Image 1 (cartoon, rainbow, N blue to C red):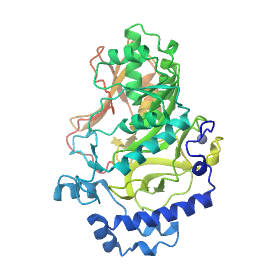
Image 2: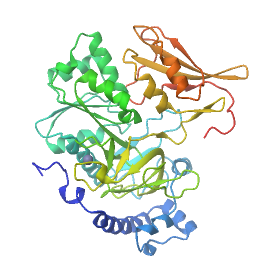
Image 3: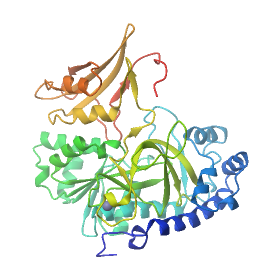
Length: 440
Ligand SMILES: [Zn+2]
């Protein structure tokens, strides 16, 4: 392994046929395991599905889908952990919750020792694939709360043998100080916080590109794969960006960006099955078509995860778009957004990703916020920017051109008045009281 570009050379280079037979065997074991969960016993019975019916991977579609709403409902009826887990709090070793950024009750996950070993293993595929090795010093800019965030990356970096510096709860300035003092070569954070650290470095007169940091491992927001945002981060740090995507429900990342930078992320296909479905018909979409990502995880021991609807939008392309030799398919452009994050303004669709892509073309903008407001009967989009050189003259026009001529009101915000974020940013604020019909 030491000289290999792959963390798990045996599985990362399997052919599609070999991968599929491995995954069918794992799926059979997982379905039998899931029968210990009250939720799955009920869901399987309702769908008329029995684990012994699995003849090929095509039979995956006989397994009922799992939604976040079902998970949350189970938690309400049977608190605190619901009826999905097959483990008990006595047998488990960790609890994690979602970040609860939407203001809703957080989802709670219960992990066993086996889960946690797997979480670290999954992150190790990603870190190793990005080029992180034992000689690296990895700085983790993360508050270490009940949100799962970079906990798994922490364990994986130790597994690889890197020197880990847990950033913990401290100010952005003191985190920067530690990055320099310990000579970090790798920094892990959200894309938003990577930019925030860079902004603070400029204010403190720190020359980040001159520091030993060579790689940034990003997670937690789709922005890690937005080319304009990546370019800003790479320039500010003088370091390469590697995106990853995970979720509390899965417990870890399931996709990562290898050292070849394929314009997206590989799916760790020996450890998960990821389907891409049309969110309305729930039929699979072909390669190159955007759809909803649905995850089946072979490593979730305490909470079996079968066909979980993530609401993430992705476009899957074959593995050979990347020259690294992995047999794992790629999500081109990373996570493209959420199935439910589109806004409808006067008949025009506005996607947060598309707006960020344009705002990030202006490097002087240090922070921004997009507000969807209603004045009388008229809906408006207001983009507020912090920019020491003033509002870029071109910003409103470019936003409008990308949105069928929809007018965006661009305003200058006073320095340091817009919210800053350490984890997932909440830059899109909808202040309209009543919804305007269907907004999906
Ligand atoms: Zn690759």
